[in-house]
Length: 544
Image (cartoon, rainbow, N blue to C red; front, side, top):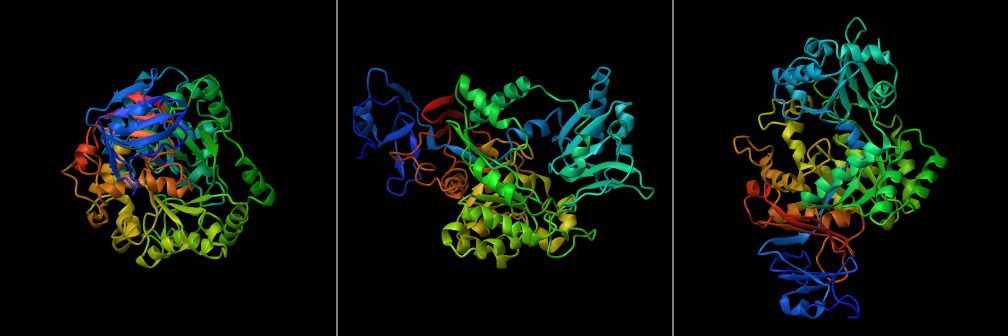
């Protein structure tokens, strides 16, 4: 029998019945009914356990056999900054250069005078063995300036007219591995690597009004809720008015998702800047809060900016994002002493090692438990036990595997070489080593749909593509592990395990209902399974 979380003074707002409830609560792993009041779960059990919670104004929802789970949380997303990154053509479906040219040519023909062609999510592999160069696309664009972001989010291709508009006519000097790639004569190829180089385009790129951005953000969050998401760990605060946009949305209603925001801390940040980040942690609304700080220890493999223990096949990948890694360590320790959580982008093995070394230098176990590492694309076995021993959470994005191939003919695998490609995205090894493993999408780098994340974590390929060989198939998660990665482990990674990630009295009423059981149904079915209901904070934000 379930016990109410609070004295029975009012009826439930909502009672969900007829469900197969996967509570992820060890004390009661399954149930068939849940009662919700004031945004919290007040009873879990069968119909008899929730009967007394029914009142004249209680909404009774019969889930008709759907599987109800804790609300899904994307452990790594960019819903605000991502709107700028995901503007224009979605080029993720382009498999070769001909497909890309057809998309760009059609957009250029439709462009009005003064328009740009913008695109995003372009796979590096469409260029084959050819260097990324604007000469490959300029003819198709017929003089229309174009700016296309590559899928890794850390690089882009600017057309010849776009480079001219931005006044980029040669190499530039940057810190943190950024590069305007130039040919042997010093002429820009249009390949811009890392944020410093891409930002050179900002003054000339088309801008959107605050009203349009607010409308797009709310529409995106609603679309995310329709896929079963009830929350996201937001790994940036790059748009200067993001908090104002969120506050404005809450002035008029409610956010469909609960957002925990990690503003960036970049190299060169001194004590004053760190203290500002500490002060930002007090910023919050009803369903959003600033709850951590995001660091970068390296860039990407494909851009040659991942920090590797040994150089990649081009002799690159030997530089950390922080020119002096000791400065990174001091910054993390400053925040840890203030009780602030950190999340560090670390893709290469040297970057992962340095983050773990940084945490190990903290003597206080409570301060050690505040940290997580994002991406972890290749790491040797010697580093795996350190995650659990130090309390560092691993945050990984299984759908990034779509940009690699089992035969290692893709750009990522060729860059790192056979040995390192053989230990790609070691999700299962990390779980079996006892690590907290939170899963996410890194939208817009991959689609935000958590069903794709759940399925790909099990298949090691995208769902619905059985002809594709799985990448490092031995790293597949079980259905339960995958679900935990978007629920209970997502809560553990941010210290919310006492209020989130389970269906139990007193916990937040953040819930997701699937037409199939996401744990036991075939993974390809999970990838396309209807989401029958999404509830955030006791409010139904999506209903099929």
